[in-house]
Image (cartoon, each protein chain N blue to C red):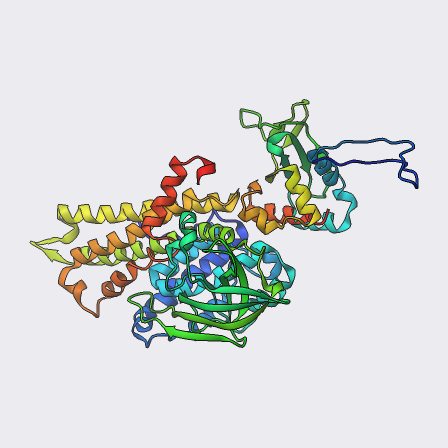
Length: 405
Length: 149
């Protein structure tokens, strides 16, 4: 019997019954429709979105995966979402990010349970028209300073929200925002004027069609090119006070909570990337011969394949464990998601490196898929916590008493 | 914090027959939860979640049980799981309760704050003031029902 590194989409017994079919269908869609067309999207002009495939994903529920079933969404928890996004990432991580970034916009509204905001900004995702959204946090000068609490006082020149009557006026610029060039809505983290650093963060829902919103530059990224990313500029955009998600000044805690949940699915995406490198390497070492033997029959090659498989299996075990913990625990845990993402992000890069070594000159060609996988493999460590930020989170949780964190 | 309940105060502010009942926040919180079945908006919101819930207040100082219909029962001070894997839990008063679908943990003060609108469910989640074991969106749904008490 040959072991497959790909999960069996017909064996989803650990998921709630209602989630199995949607996960299977989306997973098959990723394997059958997204994977064969990934190269074409990677080479398309920057900012190009494959709306036909986004619409197909929409029809399968891909843009409402985290919305409650009672609202018409799929109601997927972290484990089910992770299963889906690992499949999309093994096919095309940029496409995984398009779906994931839209989910990032939706999550704060789902957690808040604000019926008015849900009716106005979540219900549109249940329609026939595919809508994308984004979560606008990062800025030119503020990256990790928005991830680690001890850095928050240093987050300067943030997008600012100034109270004016029954509105807040947003002014500033966000950068590196997935889906920004094409999103309809955004959750925007801005600092309330008069509150230094980013401890004054507040989350606003912004319709990107409003006056004053400007799409800035679209980024020409090294990888994840299927997912358009860019700048959002807010030129005195008036946001009704009712569009605050949760509490004024509650944005930091909300961002942290959402980040801990999101790290699980980010780890699943990184696992998908690590798996894709292994799949490519397996095809090579089971076909190519040197000194009369298939490559995998050479001991050093066998060791590399085994190490790559161990990396994928351990990354998957960790994100699944983190997902099950996140699905069943409040406060939202920080330790398991950070560990899972740390390991998976490393697996993505290491497996790409090893696969390049195994495949050699062939992998160094622009027309081999390994070239794209290599570029994409560096993506996971950029968002939702760098390896360094994750390490500090893990160590603080292990070493500091609660009151010192 | 205490809640003063004054009874029979005269029009001039002189207390003719006064009964001061000092209640702690946790006692008031328990009282509020016990009223769940009698508040349509709250009980309908709770029933929509469709779970059995164990509510643990103030780290186990008080524990209550809510069945899927919204019937509330106090179960004593602590409610440990019986060792040996029985599908039941024991109250310190000897009563036995099935293992709940979810356990929700918060302080009595926070439960009152949710009920009075001084604390949002989102804030309770993000500030780590709402604890839960079991499907978290069910726990969040239960917390939302508390905002209607």
